[in-house]
Amino acid sequence: MSRYHPLLVALHWLLAIAILVALFMGTFSLAETPNSDPNKIFGLRGHMSVGISILVLMLIRVITRFASTRPPKVETGNALIDTAGSVAHVGLYVLVFAMCISGLALANLAGLPGIVFGGYGTLPADFSEYGPRAVHGIIAKLLMALVLLHVAGALYHQFIRKDGLIRRMWFGNRKS
Ligand code: HEM
Ligand code: HEM
Image (tube, rainbow, N blue to C red):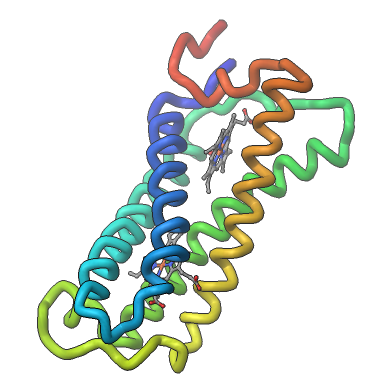
């Protein structure tokens, strides 16, 4: 098997975009907008919709990952780098799920489903009094660091090792 399942490939790139959007918008727009700003609800509506979509797509991705055949683990000849690659992949799954769960916990504690989607009630002055808010912010930073490492790893394979690894995460004949 020379490539990942096409559904896993589609989900990898769709989720990569959605996760990067959630990270950027969350950090540079949502967290910077005070809850008293009338536009905050729109930002939250977008962010929560993207976040919940990420959770649903991640669940489909995990099922597809275990139900499909995957290409063999890449070997660079350096056991440390190989292990780091595997740990990073598991870590990406764990951190993305942790973002979704802490986001949902925060939203529920602050009554956001009703306020943001139902149109009743008002936003709390800010979210800092809710424990999951800090967790969500810290995990976001860890996820950013791991995504950077992951992309650096992909570039290392592509341009230094020149082993064409990126093809495994693209569509095409899976047998060759
Ligand atoms: C992978 C999924 C997600 C990512 C990458 C993400 C990312 C972020 C980031 C980067 C921030 C700003 C953190 C900071 O700078 O301290 C944030 C804030 C927030 N997120 Fe998420 N998030 C995700 C899922 C969710 C979900 C599922 C919900 C709720 C349904 C949610 C609700 C919130 C809320 C309420 C805030 C606080 C905004 C504020 O302080 O004004 N997030 N998110
Ligand atoms: C945006 C730039 C990105 C690039 C260039 C990239 C590249 C790749 C490549 C080439 C592979 C295949 C590795 C192999 O053959 O073993 C891969 C796998 C993987 N990527 Fe990415 N990726 C990116 C973003 C992301 C993001 C944002 C996430 C999640 C937060 C992610 C999560 C994963 C995971 C978990 C795997 C392992 C395969 C699996 O089990 O699904 N990637 N990536």
